[in-house]
Image (tube, rainbow, N blue to C red; front, side, top):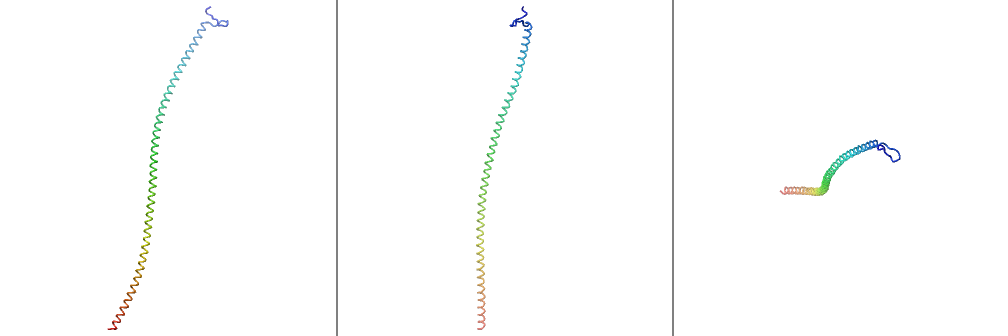
Length: 162
């Protein structure tokens, strides 16, 4: 009969209609699974596309951030270099001012020392002049006294002779 089939083991198998329904159910299930799989694959690919776009966008942002950071870093290094140069110039100027101050102080000290020595010399000279004046004054006083004595003696002699 056409309704039965031989199962290859010497026995009678399932009905062809039953087999067709099972095969059809399996084929339908397989088709649904394939459809679900394709749907899941499409969804996964869409999500991967979104992720890829996000990564690309983030990579672009990161590249721009790196460029901006490099620019800022370069500017900061330039400013730091300028500040170091200015600081170095300031230290040099301070050192030169210290040298100038030191030289000026030495010059003032030498001038003060010279004026002090001149003052001592003038004081000594004045003292010597005062002593000489005193001595000359005493000598002149003695001469005046002697001359007055001689004038008085001459008057007395003149009075005696008159």
